[in-house]
Length: 373
Ligand SMILES: [Zn+2]
Image 1 (tube, rainbow, N blue to C red):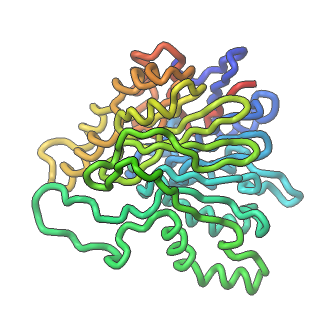
Image 2 (cartoon, helix red, strand yellow):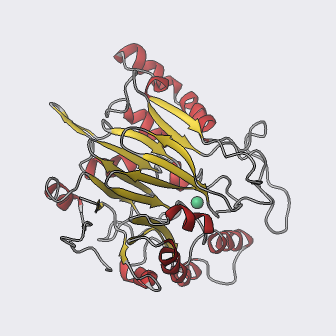
């Protein structure tokens, strides 16, 4: 199926959910386990014509399982989108959108996937984030360990933070907390609020030994999925995907009692991803529309534009290749996500279902996709 009409009786409901509609459809139309696409825009670029009917917020998705939800990436606007989606818990004075957040999973450390991590932590103090006896795990890539190679000709650029130029998730969160220390100390002393370390437990994903991964020469070795998290409701496995020179870049699979959901993160076509997604109910996969990308970077290109253009082509999945990936993985439903360029209308991504015999859905912000039930 292309589009966002309700698919009653198929075990999966895709419902367009503009903010008003999102509020209306809470309740019976949502099954115990469901996906909420919070932000479906691909890339850090902001567009002047945002604000239209197909506005897309920064990359983030939620997987709701019962009374908890798990967040996959934290792109621009994530807290606002969680609030609009009606997630969280209601209390006497309003809704705490982060009150049911049980884990944050970061696919990779590109800014469009993590830019609102400080927002989650800082505003989280007032919006239900974690409890001192149960801090929210925030899990993501570890330190890259070495700078990426220099693309093209020209002088070596300055190195940012040369004593630690490629921090992983845990160090990133430590730096963010240090950067906002004035506020946190004020809130702790004046408002008696917890400090961030009591509410968030940032961890680096440890790669399995012996897979032969190397940040610059072998960032995407063939490998088996490996476990990164488990609680009473979900088991999360990961694999390395192809988003060079970003390393590590992960896809995540969530296995629940109601079904399995895979989030590709940013990746070019990846055999590891196919292996991870094998037999899953829903594959949420990134995609680019190459013709639209070419229009964003018209010739003749400056060296900076050329470098960005080539990165986009190399490390993302073109529309015509995503359907066959879903077919080989044998999933039931393919959801196109992280749409780039984000300003193209939905119909521009409709060809993404070609070569896939299951259902294909073009993602929209605040779309709800039921899993099982
Ligand atoms: Zn990326």
